[in-house]
Picture 1 (cartoon, rainbow, N blue to C red):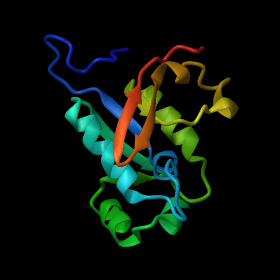
Picture 2 (cartoon, rainbow, N blue to C red; picture 1 turned 30 degrees about the vertical axis):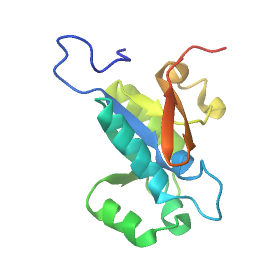
Picture 3 (cartoon, rainbow, N blue to C red; picture 1 turned 30 degrees about the horizontal axis):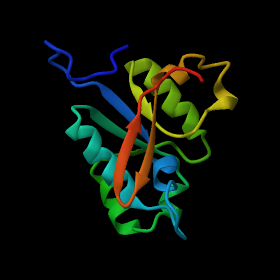
Length: 141
């Protein structure tokens, strides 16, 4: 599985699924932030990745910028798991199907048996002062 999209001779961009709920909730505040998602998308594109944003159905009711969120849903820039379903399952299943990486700080421990390779797909991150830093260790400590 490639972890550097800038590999010599590489024509296609590596797909990275963004755990939108995890990213939106990752900074202090009363509501999850749509801007957190936008920051991560921009950073991934700058680094040569192809981001795909996946959210659970509840996020649309919690997000700070509902109008912006709904617009992105309508435009297909955010993909939403069907109401009443487990968004974590969708993220992990799509990552497996697409051989994609995942941006999330979730450990997905409750899905470890069904998706043992998940830890190898993870890109951990931190957002500070609207800047994102990625960690690509991908190996258990």
